[in-house]
Length: 349
Ligand code: ATP
Ligand code: MG
Image 1 (cartoon, rainbow, N blue to C red):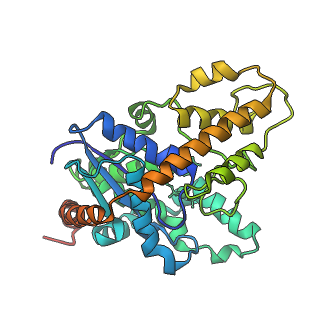
Image 2: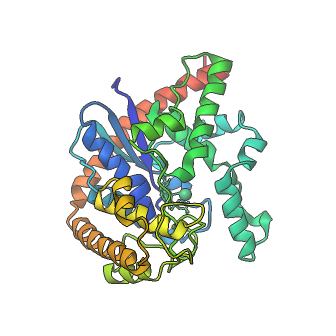
C-alpha cells in the first residue's frame, strides 16, 4: 500500500446536515470517483469525537452505523478495494497516539482554535458555565491530528471550518519530525493545496439559513436554520423559503455584504453540480429573491427525495463485512505508525 491516502470522517453524534453532505461527503465521493485506483481512500467515523459536547449515548452506536450508510448513499463505492471504511474507536492506536501528541501540543495552540472558541461561547451563552466545557472539546484537534497522521494521509477533504485543524495536524507532524527525524510522519498537505486537490478555490461552508453569519451545524440547536439529511423534503423546502436574506434588493455573490444570498447561491451550485461562476452569472443583479429561494427549495427537495431513497436501499450486511475487513487492515497500518512513534519517543527499544 504505497498509494497516497485521501482521508475524511464525519462525527456520528447527530444527524448529518446538508452542510456536512456538501462540505464533506460530496467532495470525498467526487475524489473517489475521479481517482479510482490511484489513491487509497479512508472514510471513517470518528466516534471518539462524538461526545466532546454532550450527546444521547444510547443513540451513539446506532447513529454510527447510520452515518456509514449515509456515506454509501452519497455514492461511496465500498466494493472498491482501495477504499477502507472504519470506526475510530475500533482502532486503539488513535487514543494512544493522541496522548503522545498531547504532550507536544501547546495550550496556546489549542486556545486559538475557532471551533473551540465558538462552541465554548455557545455553551456559555446557553447558560452553561464555561468550566463545564470538556477537556475533550479543547484537545480534539489533537485526536484529529492522530486520525490523519496514523495513516500517512496527505489529502484531507473537509469543510472550511476544519482548516485550522488540518494546519495543526501538519504542525504537529512537522514538529515531531524535526525532533525525532524526518521519517516519522508523512504530513497532510497545506490548506491551499488541499483546496486545489479538491478543485475548489474556497472551502465550502454552508451557513445557517436563519443566521447566515454562522455555519450550519449539527450540534448547535437551530432547527429552522439547519437542513438534515433525514428532513422531510417538503419541510426542508419550506426552511429554504424562510431563509434570512438582506435588504440590499439585488442578488450578488458576496459573503461579506450578502451572506444569506451567497449561501443560497452556493447551495444551488453544489446541489445542481454546476460551477459557482455559472450560477452567479445567471442570478447576479436579479431583484427577485423569491425566485432564487424557489430554485434552491426545489433543488433541495429533489436532492433529499433522491438521497433518502438511495439510503433506504443500502445493503447493511455488505457494509458490516466491509467494516470488519477494513478495521483489520487499518489496525495494522495504525499500529505500525504507533510503534514507530513509540520507538522515537523512547517507549520501545
Ligand atoms: P458540529 O457543529 O457538531 O461540529 P459539524 O456539522 O461540524 O458538527 P462534523 O462531524 O464536525 O459536523 O464535521 C464533519 C464534516 O462536515 C467536516 O469535514 C466539516 O468540515 C464538514 N462541515 C460541517 N459543517 C459544515 C458546513 N456548514 N459547511 C460545509 N462543511 C461542513
Ligand atoms: Mg464540526
